[in-house]
Structures are given as C-alpha cells and as structure tokens.
Image (cartoon, rainbow, N blue to C red; front, top):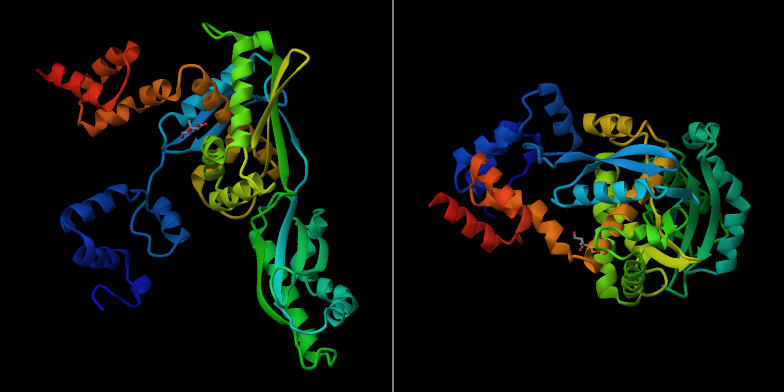
Length: 435
Ligand code: MEV
C-alpha cells in the first residue's frame, strides 16, 4: 500500500522528517524549515520534549500566560494558563479583578476519591463468585501491598473494593469496583498498577479453585475510571446585589438577568454545552499549564454535568437576602507530583507560581479559574454581548492574518478602541490606511 512504512519510530528525527517530506509535503524545503524553526535551539529542552512521546518532529507551541489578582481563600494568586483562545486570559483577569474587591473566591474540596474497575465476564452462579470474592478479599488486597506501600505510608491507598453484579446491564458482566486515595498524585499509574495486580491475583486464585467448574470468571480488562463524581471541589463568590452595580450596569437587573441565564443553562442542553465550554476555557488552561491530563478532566466533567440524565450547567446562582451567590461544583482529578510535573520546565514554573500547591489546592485554584471564566462570559452575554470583548482581543489575530506591519497594527488597535471589530471592518480599515 502507498505511503505505508514499518519501523518509522526507529528512524532518527531527520530521517522521519525526510520520509514525511517525501510522502506528505507540498513543499519539503518549507516543511523542514518550519519544523526546525519550532525545534528548540536548546538541545536539553528539545530532548525533554522529544522524549515525551513517540515520533516527535518539532514542538507545537501554545501561549503560556498568567491571570493575576485572584483572591482565593484570602491568598492572592497569579494563575498560570496555557491556551490559544485570544480572550480567555483577559476575561479571567477581568473577573479576578472584579471579585478582588468583593471578598474574592471561597473554595472547598468536598471529596478526593478516585475509581478503578476490573471488568469480568462470568456465566456461572453469581453466589459462587460472591463467595469466592469474599473468601479471597484479603489475598487480593494483600497482593498489592508492595505497590501501595509508599502511598499508604503517606495516608493514601485503596479505600474500598467491592464485587458488583452488572448482569442487569450486560449479560455475564461483573466488576470489581475499587476506590482510591492518591493524595497529591493524579494516580493513574498507581491505580492501574493496583488493578492489574488484583486482576492477576484474582485470575490465579480462580484458576486454582475448583468452585467455578465449568464456568471460570474471566478478566476482560482493568483500568481506572475518569468518571470521578466523588473527587469534587466547590468554588464560590458572593456579594450584596448593589455591589454588582458597575458603570452603566444596574446591580439588581444584572443579578436577575444573570440568574435567568443560569436557569437557561440548567434547562437547555444546547446552551449548557456552550456554557460549560466557557468554564472549560478556564479549567483546561490551568490543567494544561500544570501538566495535568485535560482529556481525563474533560471526560469526567462532562459526564458529571450529565449525571442527572440531562446535560446541565456546572455553575449555579441564587439571590438570598439581598446577596448574589454564584458557585461551581465539579469533579477534578488532578496531580501536583508525578506525571509531567517534574519533567516539563514550564509545568514546574506554573506550580512554583502557584506556590507548589497540593493536589487539593490545585483543585481549588482550577475550579476558581472555571468559575471566573464563566462569570466573565455570562456577564458579557447578558450585558454587552460576547463579540465586543472577544473581537477586541481577536483584533491582533485578524491583523496578523492580513499581514499587517507593527506600525499598521499599532495604528489600527488605536482606531478600533471605539469601533466595532469584525473581519470586514479590519480589512477595510487596513486598506484605507495603506492607500
Ligand atoms: C467561548 O469560547 C466561550 C463562550 O461561548 C462561553 C459562553 O457562551 O458562556 C463565550
């Protein structure tokens, strides 16, 4: 077959690029120049990135920024964010400033339990399996003692292990459902190692047992779950309604419209998805900057948003005794040790900027970033509309797209201070300027 190669991963980086250029590039010279340009000139830095994954050809940069002035539980943070969307950091910083003088953000980690499962196929009598499981519960747990030793010494480890009959959902399907406390580690490797060890011991013991003839239980797979509804954090802001009054915004009307916007995000999935997407703008940016797994966080958060059978907002708002309350509650399985935390120099820096937080602290800070982002988005939506601020921030991208020079950019940024930004308007203004 055309363009198929075996042993690609064994080639040197140069050979990989050469192969790529031969088969997939319209302009090999430009491709090589581009890949080299984004390759880090510091060989040590490049080596770190080369070794994160297989077949690295170059680097894919994203802006690394901070949003300052976040008052969280009486401490002021600058929150590191890695994100490409032009308005996100500006919106976070704006929301941080807004709440800085209104009591700041208050947070609480509700629970920190992680989950893993061993999925079994078994067509025999459920009571025999239950009996076998209970008889060997200790053996199964003891077989992980080497893996869990250090975690147990620090106060974590396996919290719970139960056999679940899932045959109502799927024929012959049982599972060993396990809960873990992984402290400052996200815990994926720890959990998967424990699961695989329990599964191995289970299979060995089942093999030796005569109880099951002729129906031996079979381990299908062992893997952590990224659904962590018991690894929950809450962040909130509140202030008297009149303190929401700002320039031409009336506090009372703003609070009413804000609450209605939140009700819509609870009632209407089309809106809820976009509402939560805005929250994830803040969450993902912190998750990525701190070297955590944003795919895991995304999957878990959206499953949580749909836990009641309909996809709903992750944030909530109410007015009580003249006070406006706005809060977020979401699952976040994050780590501040292990993974990329020591390996990626910018991740190390991000954690240093956050004063080397525990995983619980990082859960709080990340939830705050999500809440702030949502506040900024909904505030814009129910007042000026989103495009005003968004397009202002996007102006430089548009100008860069039209190849504007630095001088042209400076002039047009000034010009658009009081004008509506759109692609067409920027193009027209640039043409005028160039005449
Ligand atoms: C854009 O990235 C995010 C928003 O659409 C979020 C929202 O609508 O709430 C502005």
